[in-house]
Length: 106
Image 1 (tube, helix red, strand yellow):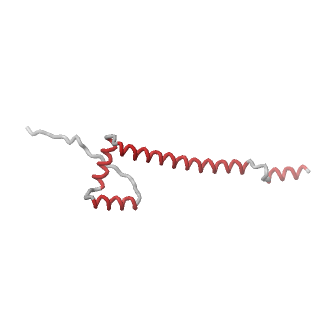
Image 2 (cartoon, rainbow, N blue to C red; image 1 turned 60 degrees about the vertical axis):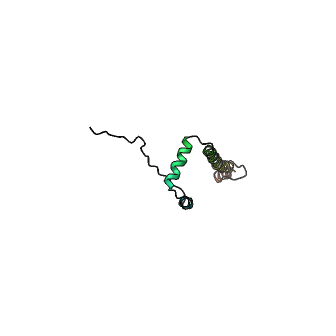
Image 3 (cartoon, rainbow, N blue to C red; image 1 turned 30 degrees about the vertical axis):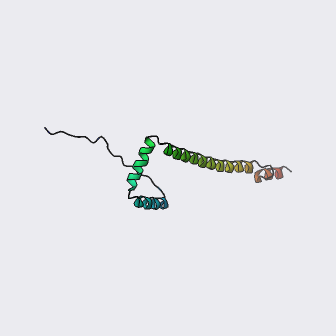
C-alpha cells in the first residue's frame, strides 16, 4: 500500500502593483544579494507574521503616513467645500434673480 503525502505548506499567489522605479531598484538590490524578489517578500512576510520589532516599526510608520495623507486629502476637500459655501452665501455678491425682482418692484 503506497503512502500518500500531503503538502501542508501550500503556497498562495499574491498580486500587487509597485512603481516602475521601485521595482527596478528592488530587482537590482535582490540581484546583488543573489536573491529573488519572491524570496525577499516571503522573508518580509514571515518577519511581519512573527512580530518582528523592526517590521512592526515599519508598519507603524507606514500606517501613520497613510493617516497623514488621508487627513491632508480631507483637509483639501474640506477647504474646497468651505470655499463653495462661502461663495454661495456671500452677501456681497449680487444674485441676478433677486436683482431682477427688486427692479420690477420699483
